[in-house]
Length: 395
Image (cartoon, helix red, strand yellow):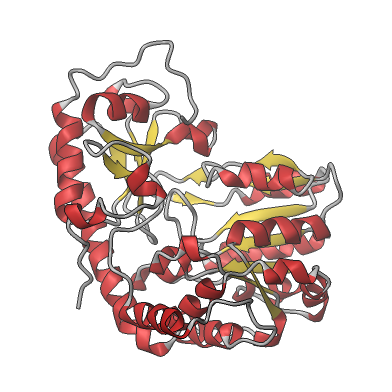
């Protein structure tokens, strides 16, 4: 089974950010939305809610935590305790609320760039100061710089904001590195907050390990924030779970204001329960087949049309991190690509200084759209230049 993307004409009827930010002559491969139809289980749950007018407040007792525990058990071999979870609107909100309770204003929080751009803002929103410890490039992939993180913790950093799997590189951190990270954090009295929004999209051979399942220390000092939103394209419905694995960390979640939980969207919760159900597993398996084909297609297209590009297939997700430095298109090539090729990619420098010369490509689309996008960029390469006036950033 595989899951096929919708046709371009159908996609252009959507009103979400991906399809409304740019004119119709632009192929949008920037923001992390996918072009697939909803899982049938999710569609059925939402249709039932609309028919019955089930559009009120989120209940104080819901099946969401138990649904996620079952999903994690089937997909990751890890069964977290539903009693140690609380919901909120989205992963970013969960990250901010947890940080506010594990750091004091002005304390430093480690992030590992190149990384999801809002991470920098989520730290400052919570009153913290960003401590950059970039991923290490091993030549074959990326890994956590545990020595750099240890130095940051010894110098006073009080928390680590982990991206697992990592966005934008698609790296699935090894169980050993996660366990070592947890021990470092515990030794220095720090917390780890693990954003695991891309976890359902880890390829079967990637051996994804939830942070809280990586060892005893992780359960004592760690938090996970999870959601069905990336895998099932539900970001607009607003639902995520904050997960703890010890009495101490659960006490932190239990102490959050009730309004944090009430921000959960009713449709988001109903959709997430359906997404995490066993009946959705076949659809998710089919999606992973499609994404596997697309990550390989992107590799082939770049090799054929832009051989100077450097790209490693991600272990998880539908985002390709592509280094275009070899083409001499400047620090932020996505600007010129948008202008000259009419293809929208995510700006590399937005992910940190390590993103200079890079773009992030969303390949959660059809092979036809992905192929046309790369062909457009290749056809426009003679027009693409990098004037000194083009600076890193996002528009």
